[in-house]
Image (cartoon, rainbow, N blue to C red; front, side, top):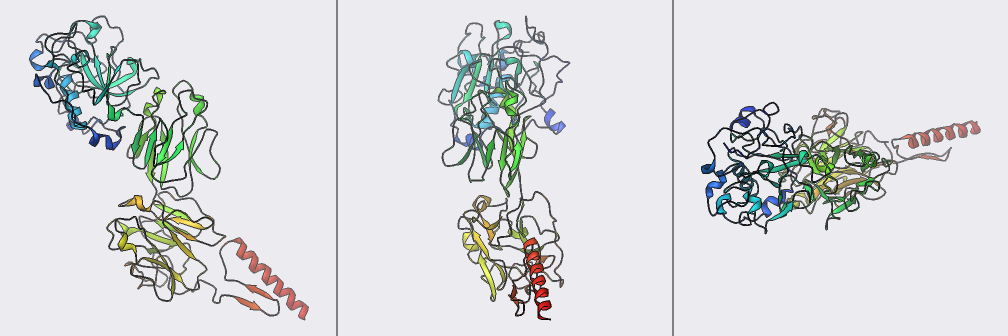
Length: 570
């Protein structure tokens, strides 16, 4: 079979048939490094014209050109690079790769993943130099077979750092007359773009038996070069809320510059951008006081010392917990690649996010996945909105008589409208109110344009459904002694206790006692009975009690003054 295809040392590779991946239950897939919008933006290249059989053609020649003699030596004549290496890390999502000749594997993958048809290798009549007719080497050598220049950029080997999903084309071993080989790039482990020994690829027919490679691996020869889809020829990456740009801030997004003065690899125009302003800050001089900071490190490259004190910091109640990986995306998380072409070692660096469902400030907590044990919670549901509001709760540390209404304000209570004009179900939120007793010390205010300065504000966010519209929604309290607190992670309980009197109000209509969870009733029994209490003999007025040390000290001072006054009267 295909004498010019790369053959890997049997001691480091194990053959696998076309049903191998299904049998093992393993798919070579990790997070894609391409922007999700790129697939849909691609146009279809030139149709397959001559020799359609080249799609099944080899590592490589068309099926009809496959020689019948036994396979040659594993690495080709004259090569002394040793056995090819398999990778521990896989960056590309290679789902859909098919067995067959190497040309067929690449062409079928590009058709499946990007909707791009590539011209069969037999469209070039005859040989071209040492490139045999219908060989994979024709993809590079023949201007007829070259991928459409309207869709692809062509880079000679060593002129650019290889990116995931690049098409990489190889001559025959030792430059001899033959078919050559073609594969797709997974990643590189070197800062040097010419270091082919650190280039890991996915391919078919690596073994001469038309198998799909069971792991990405190196190839023991220098390629001609790379073809890269223009839609992927950018260092920009996007995943979820996060967008990475290595060539300046993205217009229309909120961007934080990622500058590393001690690293010379062009870290002056790199930005992390978000659709909404999350208050992210970058530091190359250690963590920032008062913020939640994630260390961003890179032990490879030429200047690892420049990354010893680099941190990405987020304020309290950031909707996502941040995690950093310098060894590929973290399983199960949404991760965006930090790509800098001038720093080859950054090919496997990712910032990952985990959704946060609980946010707290002062004495209040919002939780998007059930009530909080030990707090007085009300269900804040809008039955007409299908976006999973049936498990969202607003809780207070103590029972303050808070109630929720999805049908207008509640008579006799002080109610605050909770709405979101940008929600797909905006009309359903026009009559939703959070209410407290009329004599409550808490004065609540709602904002769908960010936290209110000078007040204690709690973020309201459910990551399910139309979450984007709710990223800047906050319920605030003007109590001066209730400063904002950190957002909680995955804490809390999935169920709440009963009210003091054993009743609940789970329908959100305000008809119950106004609480879900521990405590909470329509009466203000937990508050001081009167708005103020006066003592004519002492001239001391005690305001309604507030939690915290300041309130306790005020009470003690007043009691002391009263005692002194009575002693004088005696």
